[in-house]
Length: 615
Image (tube, rainbow, N blue to C red; front, side, top):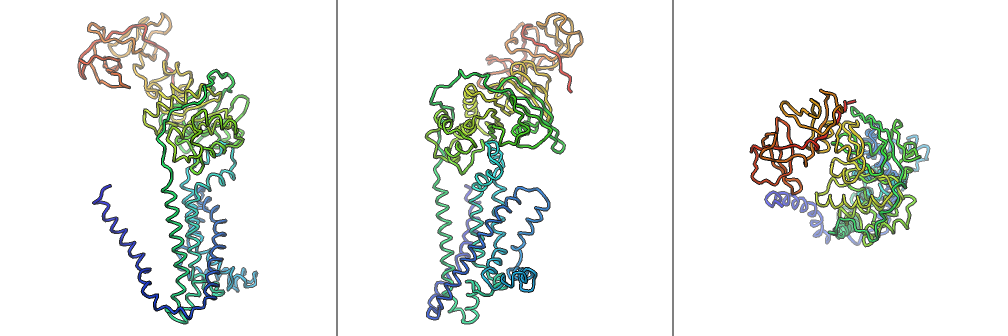
C-alpha cells in the first residue's frame, strides 16, 4: 500500500465520519432538557406502529414489483425500457413535498382514482403506504438493476444447458446471486419509507406516522416535548448498524481457499476400456450474422474428441454457443447422431457446457452444484464425487475451491446428467502454464473414459493436439481447414493455417525439375516425391521435418543464425537461408546470433503437397 498517497484519503474519510457522528454526539447533552413527563406514549407508540407497519407493507409491494422491474431494466436493450428506467428514478430527484403534490393529482379526492375509491386513498393507512412506495421504490429498483447487471450472464447460460427453463433459472440462479445487493436496496427502501415526511404529510396527514407526529408535537409543544420521540428512530438506526456489522463479519469469516492439488485424482480405476463407439457423431452447419461479422462454418467429424482453433474474434465461442442453443438462429443445423439438436431449446439438448471460468453458481455448495441439473443422477453424482476426488469438498462454495477443484466440480456437474455432448470454451485460458498442463492431462485422461463427444475451443495449438483427434481451423467466421490432427498439423492447407497452428519449417514453393523443390530464388531442395506426382511449375506447400535438418560444416546450404530460442527447456536455432527461416534443435553453444553456418537436408524429410486455393 502506498501510504503517502493513502493518507489524504484517510483524512477525508475521517472528516466525513466525524461530521456524520457529530449530530448524535451533539444531541446527548440536550437529553436533560427533554420533557419526558408530557409525552403521550400511547400516541407515540401508535405513530411508531403506523410507520413501521406502513414501511413494511410498502417494502413488500416494492419488493414484489421492483425485483422483476430491475431485472427487466438490467437485461433489456430496448429504448422504451431505458426510458421507463429513467422515469421510475424521478422520485429521487423530486422534493418530497412535490412528490406528495403529484400523488394528490392521482389519488386525491377530486381525481378519477380518488372518486372511484371514495377518497379511501388519502388520509388513511393506504395513503401512507402509497406515498412511501412512490418515494422509496427507486432505492430497491436501482439496487436490483445493478445487482442483476452484475450477475455473469454465463450463469444463466450454464443453467439453461443443465435443463432449467427461464423461470427456474431466475428463481434458482439469478435471484439468489443478486439477492445480497437487493437485500441492501430493500433495507434502504424500508428506512426511506419509515422516515418519509413530505409525501406522507401531503397525501395522508392522518393517521399520524412517526415523522408527521414528530412534526405536530414540535409545532405545538416545542423542542423539549419532541426530543423523546427521537428515541424510536435512533433505536432503529442502531439496529440497522448492528445488522450491517454482523453481515460484514459473516462475509469476512468465509473459509479461505484450500491450496489443493489441481490434478485429477480418481479414487477408482479409470474405465479406459469403455467402448468408444458408444458415443454419437456430431455434424453441424452454423450461420450467424452479427453486424459486419458473418459466421458460416460446416463440419461433420468422424471422431468424438474435437477442437476448434482460431484467433480471437474468429467466431469460435459463437460457434460453441450456437451448438449449445444459447444463440438463437433458425438457419443453423446441429445434429448429434439421429437427434436434430437445432430444433430443441438449450435446456432439452442434454449437453454439458463449460465456459472459461467454469460457470459455477457462487451461492451453491459442491453438493448443490451436482444436484442442480434437471434429471441429475444421484448415483452418478456420488460416483463422480469419489472418482474426481471431490467427496471431501461437498460443503464448499466455489470461492473456497482452487482452480483445479472448480474445473472438476464443473465436469462432475455436467457428467451427472449423462451428457452426450460436452462443450469447453477455452477452459484453461486464465491459468498459468504448469497448472494448465496438469489440467489438460487430467481432462485427456477423463476423455478416454467417457463416451460423450467433446469439443474444445482454444487458441493454443498444443492444447488442441493433446485433447482432440480432429481439428477445425477457423478465421473471420470461415473454415480454413478441417481434418484429423495429424493430417492438419503435418500438411496445413495454407500459410495462414500454419501460422495459427504455430508450425515451423513450413512454406510455399514451386516444383522444378522432377524431385526438386524451389523454395526461394537460388534455394532448391531435393525431395522424396515420386516423378510425375506434380507438374513442373506447380505451386505447392512444403514442410521440412526438424529431424531432416542437420548442422554440418560441409552442409550443402549456407545460412546465418537469425535467432536462438528456448522452448520448454530445449535450445532451437533459427537459420536464415536465402530469406527462408528454418528452426533446428541444437545444443551447439558456439553458435551465436549472426554466426554463419551450413546445413544439410535429407530429401526424405521434405514433404510436398498442393496449395489449396482460397474459397
